[in-house]
Image (cartoon, rainbow, N blue to C red):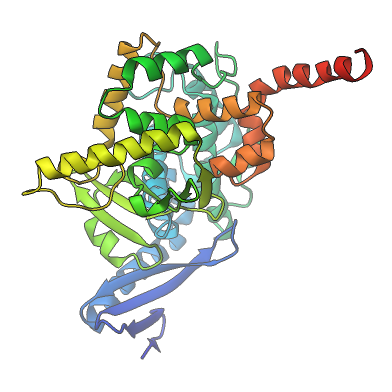
Length: 409
């Protein structure tokens, strides 16, 4: 039974025998939900000590807030207010903080941080902000993401009294240097036919055809299982996705808010499958007749493969599996994809371009933007419309031509 100690938050014993300590550390500005820091242990004393250490650390920051450096606050904010976000999102926050923000602004005292400093930082990132050793600046999207992370951290500092105003509110995200807004790369109709013709006999062709004919994301395809495909209705249900994140086995054990399963892990990363992150991402997509034929042929080919490796085959129900039945490795799939492109004599594009190709073809054929949004699993109509704005001029031309048929025939 839970018991609240003086200044130690809430401590209680779970049904599995583990002790848990929790303390409220803030309110999520987007959802309005209470944010709590949680500690786990085998004994009450253990979690009470962890909580006390945390409170002492936080109290020292409160006392020395006037002299706290930005890097100290960012580290505290990252590890205090972002414990329950998706692992992939945490990895993104961490990379933006430690690879970009701290190296440039980290030594500045929090209360001395000015909008002009942040503005210059963004401007420099647009010109020469890459950290992969290549020349050039970051994209506008990358700089905007850095801004979102920095602004959120500073907003929390403002709520806790470290700042009177949020200096990130007064800056503008710069436009990219020598780089216009790029159109989404898609295969032309001729390239689509070329790809199908040259690569139809390749082993992973069904996977790439599936991506092109459904618009599913990479993680959704790798996590797909046969029970999600209904050949009676010719429909596919998308309800989970796989992602590769930094290895955090202990944190994974303590995550009770997400339906996450661990597939495998290496020294540095782990591969996890979890339910789709939004209700819009969970969706049903119809299969065209071409895809139905491809998938039925793939079913037979997979059965043959299973019989060849029957002694060591582990049937985990994956639609696109290794020769032994396990989940395919994303890096292996990408290597094969580029090999197939080369075989079909198509310029290099990324895997995600197959999703854009699917959407573009639908819009070109007059499918409404709202339907395309539902197929893609986008949360908002505006996201779909903005992503595929380059298709709209031609659609408008085609639509206005109908006036000729109506009034001038």
